[in-house]
Image (tube, rainbow, N blue to C red; front, side, top):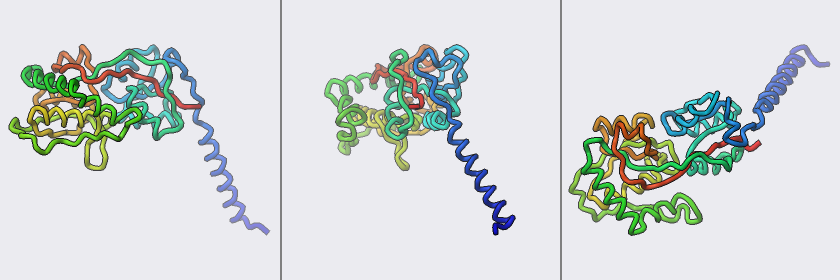
Length: 263
């Protein structure tokens, strides 16, 4: 004969089972199949990015701002928000580890990435432009890019040169290591396309690269105030940012995309 205690335990277990099943079924089906569908939706963005600006311009949308773009993707999977806006390359890295999401075919306008320098640092701007041009002409930038996308991904890691005379001292770079494949952390190391590019720039110019990992919205102010020499964090060239810093020539182009749940 079943005791009252056993009956109570089974009832609690049954209730837990129902609740767990209910929680699993509460994730809503995707309703965003075009940019037009973002009207009135909750949209995840990384705080301070151009995606943040785009989301704010969408009619009746509710931007949900995260310190890390990855946190927005997690919220999307959990059904907390309806979509995430991010740049294409970053979105593709999320697809590799989040099978429950997809990218809409429709994309926002093209963006250009450049290195930020202080308003009064035109000499450094010229130096960096010279280095970027050389790295483009000799194929170094193309090789670095191929290490992070395409069929040769992972096959061409950039190794900083050891025989360079670094007589120009240290070059302080502000970044936000939450933006793969441009910059992210592997253990204690900050790695990615931007890091490899700046190591190549410093090899060419004779600097010793020093990297500081900051919140994204702190990168431009650190450059503007002279705390960092350069800001390199997948920074899109915008009129608003030009009011605070100078930009080098463009080193990469991309566009923003919309990430949604697969189902």
